[in-house]
Image (cartoon, rainbow, N blue to C red; front, top):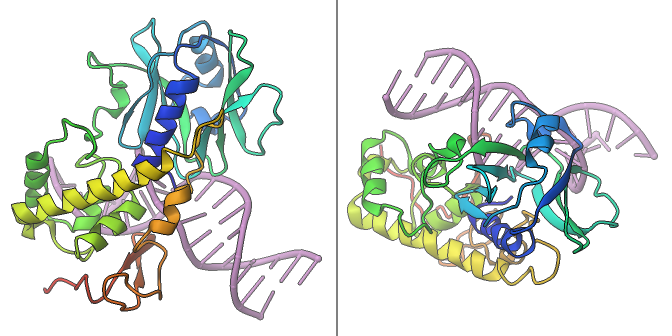
Length: 284
DNA sequence: GCCATAACCTGGGGGC
DNA sequence: TGCCCCCAGGTTATGG
């Protein structure tokens, strides 16, 4: 599942292989892949034609390609299974190919959006003066953004009457953290996922943010080495980092700190993985 | 206004 | 072999 580190790897790939190119043709092969573009697939295709792609940008799990000659941008979200691939034009179509973008140069490659579960998609939106697509103005900065405000995040936790993992997944408070990295950061911080956010002291918040950044940077460092060819790495499987996970998916396996078998608990229609010894259930 | 939960979607995998 | 059901989960809509 693509979370912030995976999306950043994709952004870098797009920067290398797509930015600067001029769109000639767009095929929308599945309407659901452009459902956020309310005017529909034909409109999406028509509006892109002839425009030059600017520098790829990202906030949290959203990434976008500004149109260099227009105050608008192609917004992309990979959802759970989305991939953005740069493929040779004559390569066979992927089984779940949803959108194809061709360019006017003679590099011989095209951009493909491939998505099995169609939770992701592309859409075109106007941009705010600072270049942000208007529809994601409510998405908070992510913890790797130099302008992320640690103190505002702490105050947000203190104000909320909810629990920490819910807060970490709330993209209007902090973006880019999904189920996997939430569990990883909470394990590193020795915090139970149901700890009330109102109990957080400033040092505890600071420590947790540090672990979030550490685990994301570690994933980024590994993922960043995996696209050095035409293939824009996007398989959301967190590829090489998967074997470095300490919590997620490790039910029954020994905690890497204390050896206690890790547990999995159903949580919000998904799962939370934690060490019952290191991450004690809060009282009350 | 805040918070919790259901719904969206598809294919892999386990059980029988 | 094949059918059924569970599971994965980011975001948004809805309801309390």
